[in-house]
Length: 173
Image (cartoon, rainbow, N blue to C red; front, side, top):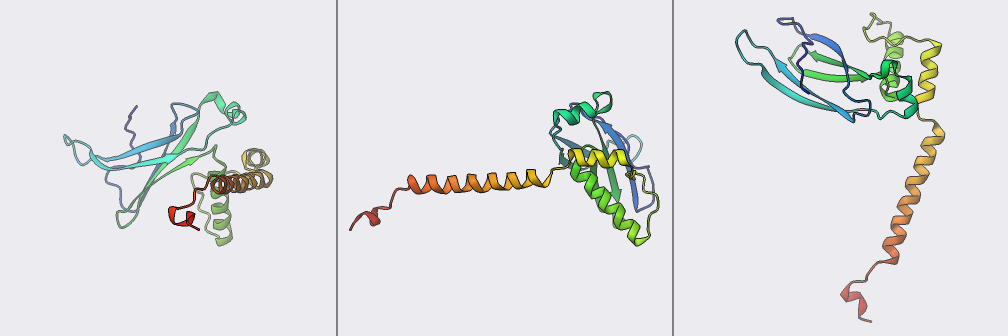
């Protein structure tokens, strides 16, 4: 279902940015598509600026149970820089990669002494750290995945070797 939600204020000076929190239609939704439109004037139709698609982290049953009210939300941010370049991004509070990137970004800002109180600040408390530990992939899972990929590749090579048919020129001896 398409729904137009204003994110940036009309006639705001560049650079400009804004965000909105949206609820997903389904917990198992694989992604979101964002169509950016511009209101050019009263009585004028909305002008299409661009389409943006993002894949979402697939929730496990345990992660789904942790959601409040069984609803999943994502933060959609839109920025237009001084040159007019449009940047659209999403932040999924249930995605370990998003949380990790946010935490690294905030640590970088702290070391640079530039913390201006970002609106999307991830609170550093014990409860959130525990959540990060629960949903982040463990090194053991990563090792097992890597081993599985290597085994699968070796199996593929073995099947190719066993069922390999020599070329016509190679049969003449």
